[in-house]
Image 1 (tube, rainbow, N blue to C red):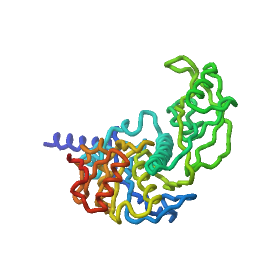
Image 2 (spheres, one colour):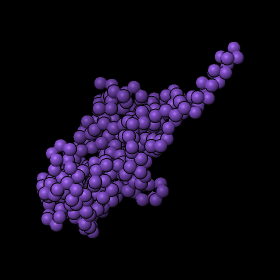
Image 3 (tube, rainbow, N blue to C red):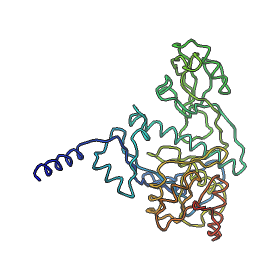
Image 4 (tube, rainbow, N blue to C red):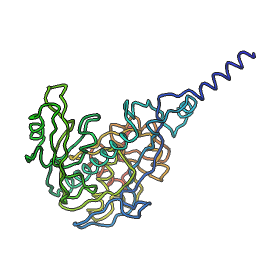
Length: 351
């Protein structure tokens, strides 16, 4: 008995001290895209240079809190997390790829958030039939590539080595004229935080090239693409939020402010989902935690991406009505049904 007791104590001590490679997720704050920021008192979405309308009710985007890249829970903490309904324990590398630091993750999330804002603006204006222009930008930067830390997602590309460029092919041709190891000079306009179509300050940035493992030619590790420019300012002013999953709710908030009346008729609607320029709603991570966050904030309805429906249906808190959405247009039709009281016809994640 003494030996068994000592062994049990040893195992308990080991479980407390032993670190396991997992990350914990929990419900984060929600933000009403129709409201104001608590810290600053300024609107989450501000329209300047175009008629806008007051909007009531809630169109809340939801978030997930994630433990840091260096955090490793003990075996006991991980087991406790697995047993709780309001904590999601996932493999560390699913959230932080090997070698990624907190700073790297923060930068990546900020860039994804910035691009999601642009997609949200574009999808909203496309839905409303408002014409836009376009410009060449850095769409993404490959982790560990020479461009990382020099160029950033959302930077406008004006020229390479002094020659104007208008599309991704022109950028590729300019870079591959170099021998690997030489530097290409990018003339860029750093991304404007509010995404407005206003001129910025051009700057020249030298980026070393490396040999492409696929073609053997010079590369810097960016993916260029076109971004829409807007005929008026649409400022999205949230701070300390990252990732691409707020796109759908931002688009709905923008449309609500650009059109008379209320999309929600004063109801509390929350949701999540990425958005493309064409208005397609994509899946996100941590849906179970976002459902809890929405329920705790007081939401009655939750707009869930169709691709997340199976998981969401298994984790729906009581009192929260799940609505399946595949497109921005579908989300608007669902809100119309909520306004008119035809909630029995809402698209369901159970179907």
